[in-house]
Image (cartoon, rainbow, N blue to C red; front, side):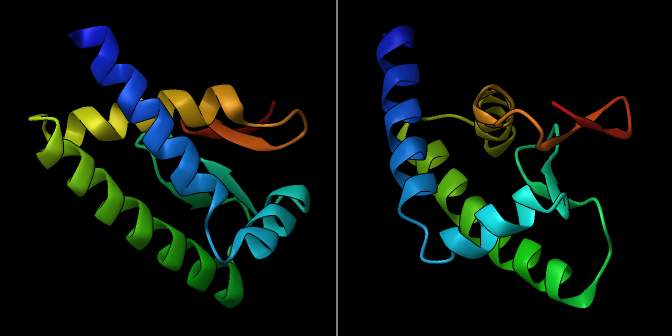
Length: 108
């Protein structure tokens, strides 16, 4: 049961992240070192610029809506889904992109 739940979650988040309409902007921001993955399942600003902050808000709003939907569907808390998403995002982060480690931005 637990394994199938995790498999469902991973499949859903994979589809979610690959189908975002702003994928090119997000990929560019990651490639340029402007944004990174945080330990809470959301993006954070490595470089604080108005356009970067706007992108982060857009992405994080969509992530939170999807996380809430997944939590409800799978009888989990939002926090549980956020932690699972953060773990998956860290694993999927490409070499050279930023992740937050102990409060510091680090290139993977």
